[in-house]
Length: 598
Ligand code: UGB
Image 1 (cartoon, protein in one colour):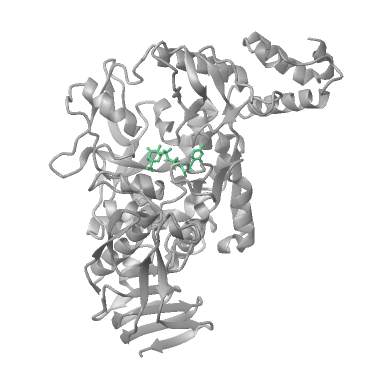
Image 2: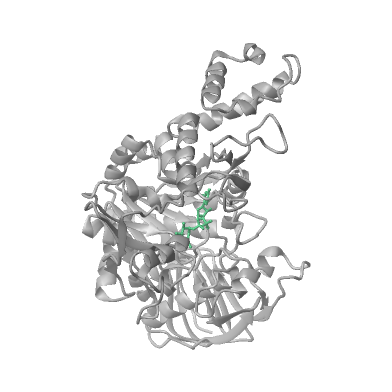
């Protein structure tokens, strides 16, 4: 109490609130005034930050924590009274008429979109020391995830605005949610690379704050073990993105500027933008307020399942049920075998890939009521079965896909299921854990993430009429993968199937040992027979026709052991590197028409 004199009136209010909330232990060890006073003030600066960044403030955080900890102790089922069933949504098949129609609708709509990348997570499962968006999504060109995302948005912007012929918004904004763990490195990556071609004013970084840790079931805030004048904090989860968009005023700004859609995506999915145009088309055509992208999911795969939940009292919702909860929920509600594959070889519950498309108007209206607060959960690790003490401090968490939980039944909540090879190849698991994934389930590793890019591009070119050799099997970092020809292109070369198709003609073929990188908008493949490596770079305005027979020793994939620390980490985690033996490489630096027929 004597220390109160050191504080500003605002800080005194916070101190009173903490005392009322039974948090006196935070000050018990404080010495007399005159000793470490600056540290005491710094403590209250932190309290003020924790208070301001949580919808409803710290008292509300503590109150919710007590309720959720009591539920957890009592073993309360969060889905009490709900019965799960398989929901119905749009299922798309790549390149059929329906898909192409949706892609066209999506591209037209894209200029009214805003993108939000959630990139505050450190990726503990991956164990990579850098930020995940700086990882190369493939090692043929070494393009990192953030560059690929930005170039994809710019490609969409270009095509969409061209179609609109000058009407409406002309720039698609990108917001990136960062955290203390990722903020400075994300900013540095952008600045070092001139924002990968985006205007800096188009990109907004929103930093999420961590939340206070909890020491016991009474939600006593944990003192930081390294500093007695700090509260220990941990990440609150990707659900913070909603309150940040709301409190920053960004959503309001976007709506005011005539934007209609906000698209959320995660840090390491190199396939995602292949699915964006069609799924945005589904949102626009079906008038979905919420559209979750999904892929067929193997039973027990570590991605959430999109589930229809019907309550005894008549409520229903279509929502993601997290992977660790789906199996027990099914077992408790009349499915004795739990989460199992059906005759399709997949679980009947589509897998949530955490790509959400929300219509901004209804979204903002909902957030004005909730302030962006998302239903939270707590996951304490108890010391023993009495559930009275924790092994280590815990905290409340929230997930961005839980947004629909507060929506009224009238909200139009849908989902879109994409071909699994087209839409989802995240890099989440470290090599050792990936090698333990049950056979047939996706590895979600740097190895599988890169191989998935080559597979998808090979399959897309096949659909466009190119003869592409079958893959060969190989094992890298203990993971068995299909190795397709290394086919990559810049997003502006072909973001939709129609665009890709318009750039391929005649009899084209690519052999299994080949590599092709197309770095330019107007590169046309015409009667090309490729058996080796071909790299074409063309500035905007350079129209290049590539044909004839290209044959050389090519680029060879060589194994690397992930334990070999002499190899850079981003190479080791994929288990291979590319030995660039021989290639045909051409750069067209001036606008004009060119023909390359070796
Ligand atoms: N993220 C943040 O921005 N802030 C945070 O505090 C935490 C994360 P993870 P997770 O796609 O396979 C999700 O850790 O949470 C960002 C879905 O919940 O990679 O285990 C982080 O940077 C699950 O339903 O995934 O699982 C990253 O971009 C399923 O869809 C993103 O949030 C699963 O993803 C996801 O964080 C999946």
